[in-house]
Image (cartoon, rainbow, N blue to C red):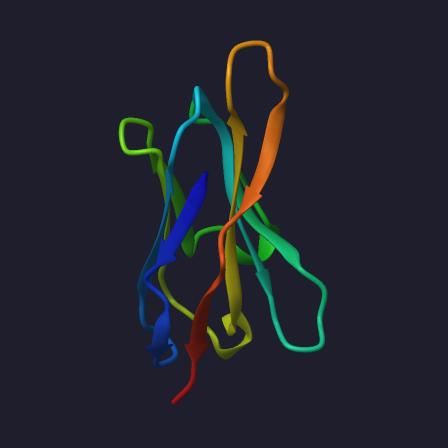
Length: 120
């Protein structure tokens, strides 16, 4: 199983970016998907999660600005980030729960991280 994240970059305050993370390889099913971020000198923190059925949870500091979504046919999770602030600068990681085969437990997979820098 491999996760490929993309979409990061440098953007001015108030700007937007859209991150994506796709799971590929041999597996049975994809379950909860989410985004986390880690700024320099800080611990990794939750940005948002989305279940297979579409239930969404956001960290308070991104509510109203970020939107998480998924495409189950493409095994891909997205993060639309609007009204970006300098404090959103961080390395953003996707996390996907995958069941490899029938009766196996779900396993956690992390993407390699994509850098988001918000600066004027």
